[in-house]
Image (cartoon, rainbow, N blue to C red; front, side, top):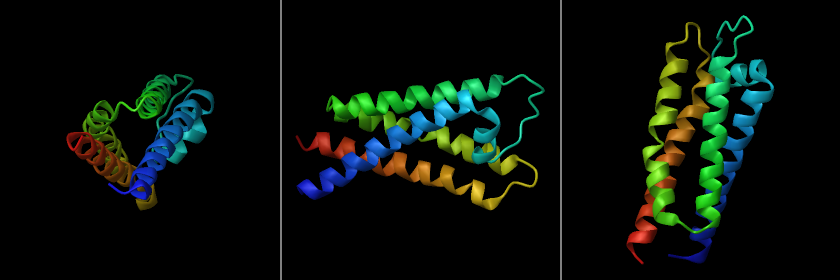
Length: 130
């Protein structure tokens, strides 16, 4: 594999992990803002349980992606990313079921599905060749 290709995948994966950490922290610190960016409205009435669950899930996943990437645990990273595809698929479905959802709110979730499949497949193929 060409070094440029490997570098592109590395930085795309790093960016994905960093974005997940950011999204997770935003859900924990500014739940209303994060909720709007996610593409749904949950009447919280002071109960931000959904936001806490979503925030810690994304924070954890982002940190695991970054740690596996930096430790060069590419096989585990590939497996994690491929299996993690179910998360943005479900997020996409949740937004899609939201009455009056904006189509633009679906794009980040669709992109996340594509990233999980492409990046995960790359790392699984990359480690299979070694």
